[in-house]
Every structure is written in C-alpha cells, then in structure tokens.
Length: 334
Image 1 (cartoon, helix red, strand yellow):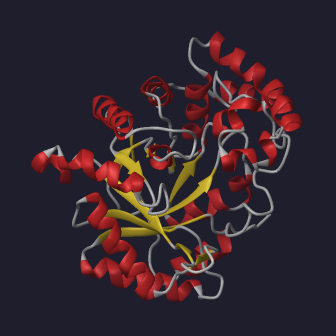
Image 2 (cartoon, rainbow, N blue to C red):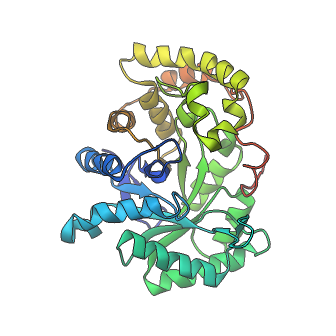
Image 3 (cartoon, rainbow, N blue to C red):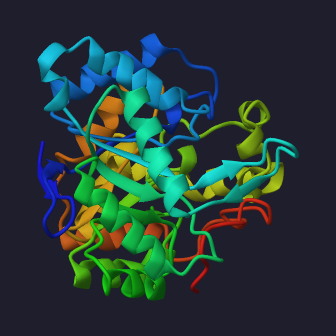
C-alpha cells in the first residue's frame, strides 16, 4: 500500500482510508461483526486510516471501531490513524438539527468520541459542519487549544470553501479538508484542490466511487428506496439514476478491458489527480473493500487519465449532488 501525508506536519497514512459511515445503517443494515471483518481486511491490505463521525449511527460507528480496537490489546494505539468529526447537533425539544462550533460543544464532543473509541488521543478531528454564526478564526483557535491538551493531533474542516480555508490557515495549520470528490463530483477542482495543495493540507475525498455510480454494481432504484438519505438525493431519483447508470456503462467497460473493477479505476483516477488527495471509500462488503484497495495499486498514464475523463467529462452527471435540504451546511463556492 502506498502512503500519503495527512497534512504538512501530520503522520504518513495509507493512500486510501475507510469511510466508516458504512459502519452505521446509513446505506443499509449492517452489523458490528461485518464492520470488524472490514477492519481485519484493512490490516491485511495495509490500510491505516479510518474516518468516522459522532453522528454516524448516533455514535454507533465510533463504538464499533472502539470495540474492535479493544480486542487488539496494546496494539490498539498503533494500528490505525483515527479521524472523527463533530459539530452537528440536535435540539432535544424539537429534534431539529443545527450546527454548534462553540468551545464547550467541541471540547465535550472530543471527550465523548474518545470514550466511544476507547482512546486517549484522536489523530485528526474535523468540524463536521461550519456554524456560520461563529467566525472561522474563532473556531480554529478553539481547535488549536484542544491540540495543546494532547487529545487531538491535528484538525480540519468538512465541506468548506477555499476562502474559508485560507482564513482558518492564517490562524493555525489545517491538516485536512474533507469534501466529496470523484469523477461524478469535480467541484473541488474549482479552487479547493488548489488551495489545499498550496497550504500543505490533505484533500480527503469522501464518496470517491460516486455513491455506487462508479462501481460495477450501482444501486438500483428499488434498493435506493430503502436508504432514506439516498432516496431524497436528486441523482438517485428514477429518471436521473437511469441516466447516470447509462452514462457510466462505458466507464465500467473500460475498467473491464483493463482487467480491473470500476471502483478500483475510480479510486486510481483520484489518486493520480494530485499527491495530497486521500480517498476514503466506505462499504459494508469485504469484497468491495478489496476492490478499493486494488485502486491504490493501479498506475495510470496521462493517456489513460485523458481516456477516463473523455468518457466521463466535467458535468456528465444528471441531477444535483444534494437536495435543497441536504445542501444545508456545506459551503458553496462555485
């Protein structure tokens, strides 16, 4: 497994990580045992980075990871570089979701994540969603103070704009920015990819296989109906999903011609875009996980990169990547 650096001063980690949203029931029912099988496979493959969040399964994803680590004895502190996220809160009375980046909230969130993970240190801590009422400089200073406690190694932000990143980096080095990035979501190339590279910030790409569109087994419309979040996503309504599957068929054929899977080819494409990009695909299947790992072993020439982008050019996808409700929180910058 090749390695990449998690920020200018961060640790060397595997070039791909595990997106542990799939350790909750977000994409369908799963079990702790199934998630632990993926973590065992990660050890075999040399994958050393796990990305989770306190809202995945209401803390369930962190708890599953913590239970696996607890079985590893003294090795649990050295097997993986762990990243988690916080900042999405829920009102107890109304059940309404809101964002909280206050010092008290983030400090309490770090402590709660450490308890669920069974650790005394988190390698990377993200603000999951920016609270627009709190200046980013103040949030960055809060995180810098938590670094001084030794509870987190570095910090980053999820789904922020390049201008916001520059403001934060003026206060403290930012280890990573997390954003959706794949052949189906190219918006980071309009500023965020360049800003992270300039600042020495890792660009952590979630949903790198397009929420299944860039795999050999894209979700059917019937399967999507059992996934509440996906069922509301514009790219997966009946009309757009059919068009997106048709649009990606040539990509699947290209992968087959190269004797690899579509998922592996999509991962390889991302890794060849820039040396600071770190994809974090998620899955409930060990077979699919090993396909992701195979992508880190592929070498693509410039001609092959051009061929892939000719099949799936900028703007090919049908439907927005988020619904109006899902767009609440991520910063738009293009």
